[in-house]
Amino acid sequence: MKVTISIIKADIGGCPGHAWAHPKALEFAAERLAEAQKKGLIIDYYVYSCGDDISLLMTHTKGENNPEIHGLAWNIFKEATENIAKKLKLYGAGQDLLKETFSGNVRGMGPQVAEMEIEERPSEPIVVIAADKTEPGAFNLPLFKMFADPFTTAGLVIDPEMHAGFKFEIIDVYEGRVYILDAPERIYDIMALIGTPGRYIIRRIYRKEDLLPASVISVERLNLIAGKYVGKDDPVGIIRAQHGLPAVGEILEAFAYPHMVSGWMRGSHSGPLMPAKMTAIIPEKKIALGPKMTRFDGPPKVIALGFQLHDGYLEGPVDLFDDPAFDYVRLIASFVADYIRKMGPIMPHRLPPEEMEYTTLPKVLASLKYIPVEEYEKDRYKYLKESS
Image: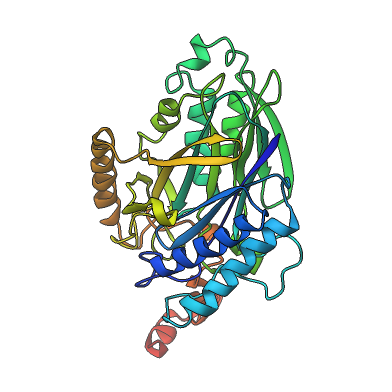
């Protein structure tokens, strides 16, 4: 039986500000998904958050980009916005829902989407990841380390099923181009692209020998959809583990270095990606409350939940970053956050101009008067006296 794993994520309002997703919104979403499960639309589900974002994890047999599944998620987010976010006056209520009418697919409508249709192996461990206060390209480096770096993933060297390497599907989100590059043969070309994570994003990874789907990441960019800043893109992803793929520990090892990513405060700053613990997991309600975004609305955080998939059902989750082994990583991230914050509004802490184009900064700059250089040089004291 082919099983599709779908994650559809949206920010429908924060409490307070951009700090956290309200538990009532997660409970509402879980109740609606339970109804869909009873009707046979989905096999299983889990609802979890990271910062102020809510992710709907669903398993089903309807394939990727299915209108019923996407419509279910869209309606849940719309209803949660109306019934909870707006009534409680949550901050930015419904901010990721950029269109009024559902058109059969939520791609391009605001929510982030990661889906993978698979044939279940005899044992099917999966890791789902989600980040807040950053962009889809934030996962470029850890994915590269998982699937192409033998210093992170020992299996690339010692596991015969992995030794041939992987195919990387990289998308240029500005030009709509897709690059298919093999590792290890073309790792330099891969790095040449993914080193610009705001534009080139690793979307899918396949095992080279048999094209087994190994990983998928959401790639929607809200500023390119809306034409203005409506929040950072906050990616989600699915990674299969073990049996000729990176082990769970190798997947997590890729996050043991808190690399710098774009986003953070007002989507306008660089900061370290901190692997964070969940605040609470409530099995009876099938919800998991993620970390809060506090210091400077951050720093950017990533969560990792582990599930064992069996016949489409989700056994778990296990909070994979809830371990003392990652305390030191969080300490490093805190040190880097402290260091970079002292630069205030100066680059490279503040993002470069091309990334600031869709924020509110252009409105500030548009209000400033300017003088052509040639005119100014003719009589600068005149302009100095007239300036205020």
